[in-house]
Structure formats: C-alpha cells, structure tokens
Length: 307
Image: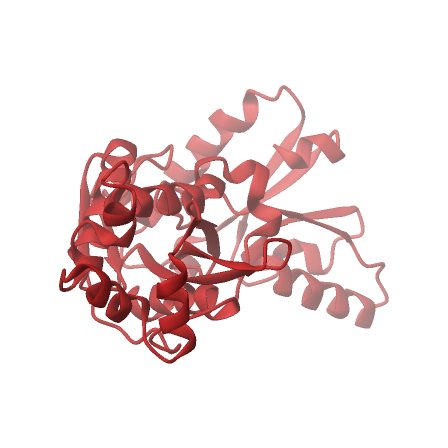
C-alpha cells in the first residue's frame, strides 16, 4: 500500500453511508466496511486511524497534522481543489501522490459495486462474458478475434458491427492506422472492448515497394487504445500498378484470380502463399500484437494512447 511507503502513520477516510448512498443503490454498512478495512490495514503492522468522510474533502481540508494525500487517478482533480482551499485557510498544501487505477480483466476499474453486482470478483476476475464489438461484418475478422480471446477469457461474446472506417476504400500509410482506430471507436458501444482491424499498403522507402500490413486497434470503455500489426507481405507488381491506377486491392485480386470477395475467404495472402498462411491467421497475429500491452499492463500503462 503506497500510503505506508511514504509515512509511518496514516489516516484513512471511508465515505459515510449517507454519502455513499448519494451515488450508489447498494452500500455495505459503514461498520462492515470499516471492519474489512481494519483487517486489511492491520497486515502492514503500522499505526493507522480510520475516519468517516461525509463530504468531498473530509478532515484533510483543515488538518494541520497531515503531510501527504494519497489519491486515485479519479480523485486527482479533487485533491488539487482541496489544496487550493487549504491555501485559502492559510494552511500548507499537502503533497499529492496519485496511485494508478487498478483495473479488472475487462479493463474497467475494480469497484465494490461491481463486486456486489457479481460482474467481477475481489481480484478483478471477470464473472460475466467479455463483450467485444468488432468494427466489421467480415466473418474472417470476427472469427480471428474469437480465436485469440477465447483462451484468454473463456467466456466471450464477440459480435461484428458494421461501421464506417472514415478512410478511403484502399487505405495507405497512416490511413491504415486511422481506419483501425476509427473502426474500434465506432464499434465499442456498450461493450467492454471495441476492436478495429484495417489492412492497407505501407510504403518502405528502403525497398521502394509497398507491403500489405494489417493493423489492429483495441479501445476499452475508458477510451484507452492499444495497437499492433501483423506481418507484411508484397503484392505482385500487377496489383500495385492497378492500385496506382485507382483500383482497390480486392478489385485487382479479383481481376487476377477470379475469386470474388477474396478478403472474406482465404484472403489475398492465402492465394499468393498457396495457403501457407491465410487471412484468418494473419489477422490473428495483428490481434495478438495489439493485445500484448493489455496482457502485461503493468509494463505498458504509460504508453497506452488516447488517439
């Protein structure tokens, strides 16, 4: 517990029943919450005092004995407001320490209300299916997401959602990333995660040639986005020439192969590789790459992007 790391004695506030009922329908009685907290704090074998808080600031707004204020990311703004009010009263501001929000398996904060509602357990493990919206009606993309998430979560509910990628039909360069991010954001709705997958052409200046690269963007209910991409491969010169003349890759591949909607089947990579690898497997790699920061969040939380 961070508070015991910066001080040998701490004051812990628990919101009163009245204050808690102002924002929640179900609240454990103050006495029970206090008992649970006392049991936990006792394991640190350091002095502590628990007080009831009946407003946003509690005793910290007037106390002359406090030095530090340990707050969550959500309470950070309130902490700075508290210091402004302390200054107005002629008191020294408190040193503020912000501890990271602890997330459950669904990337939402662990809260007592969620535990009471049996969404998660006390350790943040998900007790309901992970709901995922994929920003596409392409069955290849939807199935790839299912294959990757099922071993991780077991209970999953994956659905395809037709959304606008907001990029050209044949995206290139940064448009590929933008398309993946837009698909994820436009798909999430009330799901735990929105996943956007976009394939496009990425120019390599050293080789003077385009690679086909599939990007995956994953957005959670807090708006945090992680990204990754799968392997890149070359298209034949005839396909690149068609694209330069205004065709999409799908249109050019139909012209080359006679296979309609190839992106919904083996994919261009399946045909070109003689099925050494297919579109589903390629998509799975992109999804895995985008999920890596979420598998080890303690190592990546500082670089999660809010694009």
